[in-house]
Amino acid sequence: MTDRAETDARVKVLIEPFNKKGVDVTDATRFAQDLEWDSLTVLDFVANIEDEFDIIITMNQQAEIETVGQLVDAVGKLKG
Amino acid sequence: MPTNALRQAASEPPSDGTATDLFSKFDALIETREQLLSTGLTDPFNLVMEEVISPTVAICNGRKTILLGTYNYMGMTFDPDVIAAGKKALDEFGSGTTGSRVLNGTYVGHKAVEEALKDFYAMDHAMVFSTGYQANLGIISTIAGKDDYVILDIDSHASIYDGCALGNAQIVPFRHNDVEALEKRLGRLPEGTGKLVVLEGVYSMLGDVAPLKEMVAVSKAHGAMVLVDEAHSMGFIGEHGRGVAEAQGVIDDVDFIIGTFSKSVGTVGGFCVSNHPKFEILRLVCRPYVFTASLPPSVVATAATSIRKLMHGSNRRAHLWENSKRLHAGLKALGFKLGTEEPQAAIIAVIMPDLERGAAMWEALLHEGLYVNLARPPATPANMTLLRCSLCAEHSAEQVGEILGMFEAAGRKTGVIG
Image (tube, rainbow over all chains, first blue to last red; front, side, top):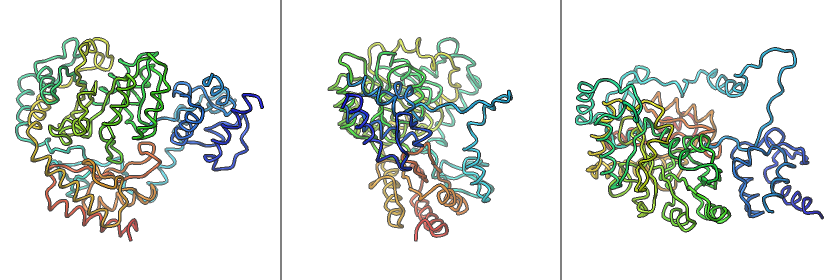
């Protein structure tokens, strides 16, 4: 498993509890439009991602993230 | 209230060359509102007070109404000394300053209210803003620069989030009142960077108090500066009414306290007090302080008088606590679900099952002759609909009894309680 694939798998596990509509999650899945997450769900989810990877994703960085693929890439960069 | 942090794709532009209506982004809200009001409900966000009789009673829709949704915690708005000071300043200094604090807008009254704040908090510096909102906007956006971090509680007030948005620091939120979540995030930040931890003493939606003792200690251990917004605790919590930081014994480790004149003080305005030796430079670099007109002379005169009276307000504080405890226990006994297990402040939040029943209950209370705040998402945590009750030191024991009776009647009428 590549490093990205491993990150991707871990991110998807964390998405599941918030995936209330049972959306089929791919790199292109958008958090706001497809998963229909509100601000509080986003904050809870981001906190879980941060703890899982021991990183910080500032709100400034979050503003650049629209899709699951972008998040996986961002996590890859942040965990260095 | 945070805005949605993750990026949202822009909606498709119309392809037929017509202009995009900038208001279309509000369509969903307009629809929700119209649906709610189409049931014949009184608009909860459009109430007019026709007459104000005292800090606790007003005439609304021609009906005498007990006020249980103001931030007039200490009941200072009709204090005779406060009113007299305002009238005198109006006569002697006119209706307004028409200028910025740093140009022609600083009168003796502005210096006097800053002196009153320094005495009230026993701190070296005080800076008065035109509103509490601007105090947070100004201090946070000015002291946290591009490479600094602001670490804040997720449930922070809009003025704190807007202060972050106005500045360009890196923003790191943590779960509400969670000391471990704060500590973890502080530990992950790069060493040697500037850090500002922003906390509130009392969170106004649920009326819960922050574990400041632990949070301030953790912040200091990680080399962060700490700002505490004590808007909802001033005058009421702590031995001298200095707030939750005083009550929990950590006020000396707090770098900045933000407060407002629009709650216990009973007028309008905001402030920051601090012992930082370089604090005064903020008067030249803080844009929400510089680029706005200063408070009218009558406002600073009423504020200064009120603040000095609040220093001797221990009897009022004791009565307000009694009111808070009695209302909390009474509502709990009636079967309402409350925001906190025990009363922690002068705010008691009654949790409604949903917006529809919350709005119906709000209206039923108004018909009973009681005004409370209806709070709804996105202002509330976890999408809750709340009826927020804020008590006043001037509420009599009889009024608290009447209030409980009204809650019981309205609760049964709307089916919120059985």
